[in-house]
Image (tube, rainbow, N blue to C red; front, side):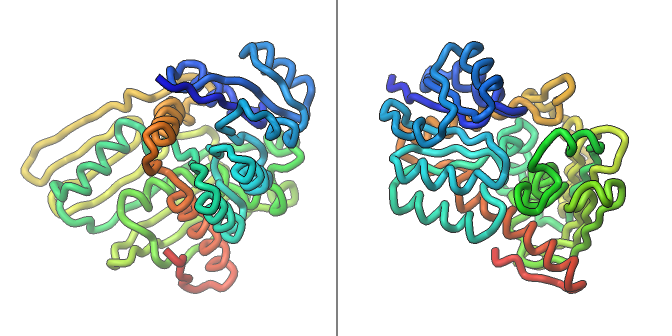
Length: 338
């Protein structure tokens, strides 16, 4: 079996999810890590017994590396991905793929030009419960979708932002609760009900005004191409990171996703499905599906097939988020371009 050599760029909060998935895969080998923080770099290189680079450009000169995982601050995702693909490396980037639609489009174009795979980490699509919902809706067994809602109520305090030189800024984070935390909820809603074509929305900074530039709360009325409506609400002003809730009302069933998936059919049948990829502990809301997504990304390279969350899928949430910001300013319905 062919093994692909990987490098992870950025040794912050999320990189270990990628590193653990790579070292547990039979299709990949963690060959290097990269970070400008030499203390973080040394700790990561020692933990995973691999090379360490403090210069990204030097890492890209390593012909032994075939896949780059990008786990850096948001504003670096696009330039790093573009440079890596142009150097002949496949790229899997953390969400968001970029902080602007223009950057995301450029990433897709470079992927097409170079033939290098581009993947985006929307790992919640790989949850057992998410896969079940998608399958149920696509088979039509639940009937036509009548409406949906997505709710995310989490907590981020002043220290979360003060401990970073990029979070809470338009220039480097690209937004707030929308582009960082609830982007996963938007991705799942769009994946489940179909592309969101237009929306009316509002964003606000309610708890950390004067501390962050970006929003901590957002709500929207979303409409798909066929006219289906969905409600969306996200905030970082709650007291805990509560489970995300998604509800989809269909002609033949009601689908509710929270800690578990409950499907109630109109004929009285009821199904409850636990997410077997659910994590525990402080960062439980990240789940365990990074490993499933990463394994599928490597399979897509080795099998030369399309990846489920490619650039065309990744850009959809960026377009939705930018439309939400535009709608909040204009106080009107805005088309997303999807």
